[in-house]
Amino acid sequence: MSIWHTFQKFFRPEANPSSQRSFTLEGDLLLSLEQLARYRGSTPRKVAADLLARELQSVEVERETWEKWQSLTEREQQVAALICLQYRTQQIATRLQIAPETVRSHVHNILHKMDLPNRIALRQLLAGWDFSSWA
Image (cartoon, rainbow, N blue to C red; front, side):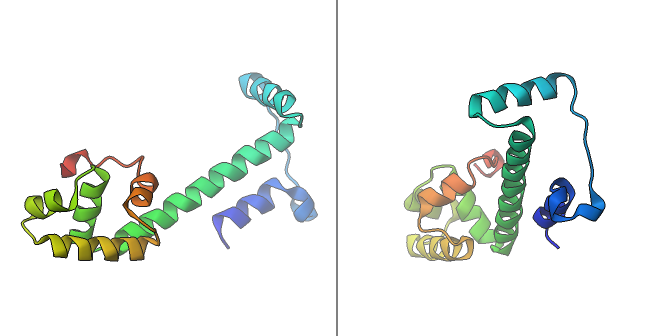
């Protein structure tokens, strides 16, 4: 069972009435949820559920991205890191002492393994990652 389904069962008792759970929200958290609910024209419970669902989706994307990253070879990871650091093909080739055609081949493999259309999408997907040690 995925993390998402586990949390759904836990936080959506109507889906599993035999294991109903309740939570008490207090202080700043409750106040923030109430303010956000008023702004959205919703309820604090619905806002909390929506926020949790978004965060769980984010965690799932991070997990999938990490698995795809680990499917790359060491050289492909180097090339991907340099792409994210805004290096161009010729700069990557010079840096890694390989031919530009080899860089292009690695880029093709990276984009295929990561299921991405182009380098821009790769940079966007890995935007929060720190590649400073690769520079």
